[in-house]
Image: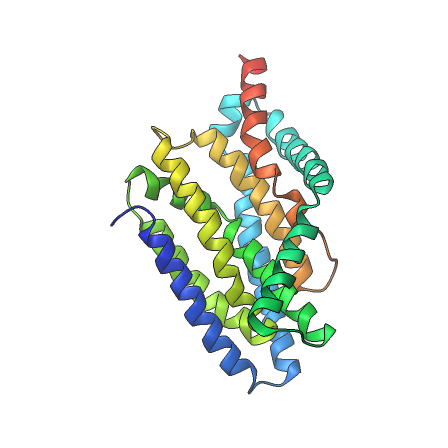
Length: 249
């Protein structure tokens, strides 16, 4: 399969899933749609927990020592969060979602617009912050196979059905984010000679898991954490692994 083609498959499954979800959502009572969102929040929390457990990865501890992994994840979220807040990433993502809503649906009442933006932001974060996104896109670009992105495509398609039943067409707009993020990572994979070392990938996965915890808290309506502002943590994490490994050696 040509590099990047799997990401197009992913975009297609999300669009199909979102369309099915919107059609179903109009026939479901609000209580049922809220229950669907709660279920997705719980499943996202489960996925987040399994990803965050990578902080205990033997590859990471062997590289940086037994006491450093927790500090690396903490530091990546703090530094990444400060950087993301200063860059106003969450605000820009929401603004982009609002712009898409106006372009695709025109001016609507504020409640509908907020629902569109929330669907766009939440689904973009869920679809683009997991380990399958990073490793799968890199491997796709490196020519190591697209199986991980194809698996992610199936999962995202079903998730899009559930999300769109609650949030509407904002979920379909997240296909733009998938195309940009996964396409960009695939290009990075084409430029790299090899995948990230296991220790670096474990740190990214653990940090991404905590970001997904934030997404789950939003879905469960517990707290509106600005998860997009924390996205730079995924870049900071491998840099801190490099620093900690140098000090450890």
